[in-house]
Image 1: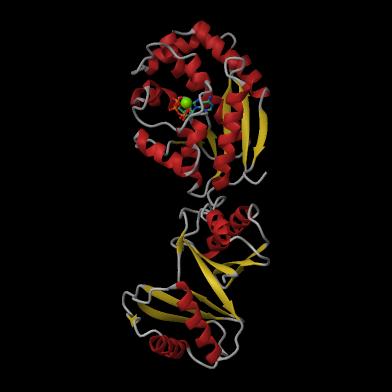
Image 2: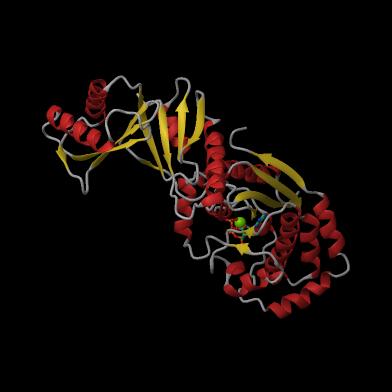
Length: 395
Ligand code: ATP
Ligand code: MG
């Protein structure tokens, strides 16, 4: 029945040159989402409208499911496309459309016509009135309500005629790539994939960094992070995942620093290295899954100590979220089941029994001086282990 979809997007703030960038990025992401669907499609941009046209047979539900992963889409309208074969035929087709889409006719409606092709013999207002009358005649239970109709029946007259009346909600947000790139510190936990999802929803393309500590963390733990990146890339588009070998740095901190400050000092080195990678790749900020008070390393004092080494902005979209809220999102985006697989990450292995919950920044800085002798070389060495894995949902 439907051969096309009209893609609606929120236009607030999309003006002038920005509009083209916005629409082009949106079309790119729509194509990325459709790549994984059965059938062939064409995505077109005409007169401020984006259409997805099916060129072959396709699976309606699968296509809609995938369009729902495209940030920037506000609504997905399945469209019936008709040849212009005169008004009589149009009226018949509209009746058939309404009959099929709304088996129960107890609703109010309004016809809204847009005449993009000016040589069409009737004006928009005339089409509204005439089609309205035809429908009232065919289905006496239906009623007109021009103020707050239950159903807004849109008729667009172009080369062909388009009819649509349903809007399937999209995810909202902004198209990926309209807001630069950010670097996600991605661990195997529940939080960081959700943080990546949330920032990418604002139009930010993602890179990711994972700190791996073999043999203390297994290959399966690493594979879990790759899998999580893949799940996030369904929404965010392809991700370059940097895997950094963090073992020697961790052992060195373990050897030289008080164990109750281990996590904080380790996190400071993670941030420093992630920042280095971010700068090299043209990224505009770091992203973490931290939330105030969730664990000892995420109290206000701990966050201050971690943040102290960052010169780039650090985005923490989950900062005010309770764990349950984060879990809800992770279930929605399908990362939860993977996140709870029981492979250890480096933070849990080297964690102290009683980590400081209120680290004193001055004390941390002093204890970090214990690392002076070797740490620069170790950081350099860790950066040389950088393994970049290109992750895409479509591969
Ligand atoms: P998550 O659920 O994301 O693992 P968490 O609640 O376990 O978070 P922490 O272990 O304190 O919290 O880590 C805080 C943040 O630091 C994580 O959300 C993530 O952004 C980053 N992070 C922690 N460990 C790693 C790692 N091994 N590699 C990359 N980033 C990490
Ligand atoms: Mg974790």
